[in-house]
Length: 113
Image (cartoon, rainbow, N blue to C red):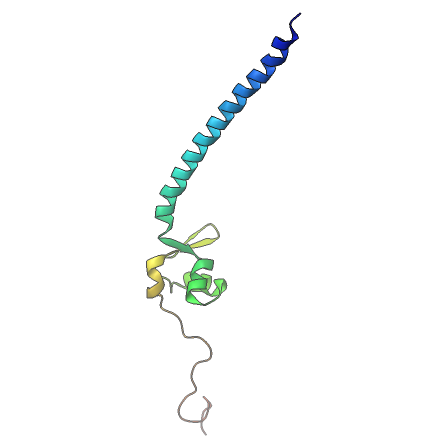
């Protein structure tokens, strides 16, 4: 009875399986890296609301509000996320913030009389 062959057989087949798994993992890594690179080239042209808010110095809610109200050219909502073209950041027509200025007649908007 040769027990060495019996012990070696499962180990050899396990080594073959592990080699195949490693090969598949390397192949999958190459594929995913390629996909990420291709998507990265396209996605580098766009920002989400959080990234745009950081660059503009305002809150994410403000950017989302501007997108909703049409102040950000080219912004599109995909599901719950606003996708904003990078080149549109300089073209944002920021709305006036705060209270409107007081009228110059000195009566603070009240009717005279």
